[in-house]
Length: 160
Figure (cartoon, rainbow, N blue to C red):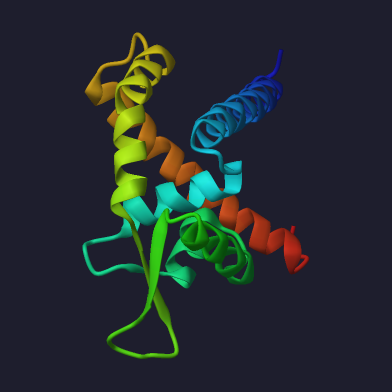
């Protein structure tokens, strides 16, 4: 097989592996969400807030950017999560037109309850990989993510 064909085969295999991984993680997120009585997108919003919040709250735009979803969807879902007492929405101290969101103690307690199961799950998913390997993998995936965003932009404007 020619070198170009081998690379094409390897890229196709990589893409299908990513499709499989994405599908499995979707199922995992659905399971975590069900344990809290929320939807998978709501679970991801809570996880994004937890990840991005530096103690001052998080804007809906920051959450939307982290999850690569529309800000209006974040607004709609965070209002529901607020009614369920999983997060607090408050006007930004810098600009009252914007809302800052933070997880409530209830949300943190529920997430903490799942932490042992989440650690066990991570051990299963990353079995056979040490910290250095995971770090290396993350660096390569970040590069592929960046390049795929560029490729998508080129495709959208007709360059490719």
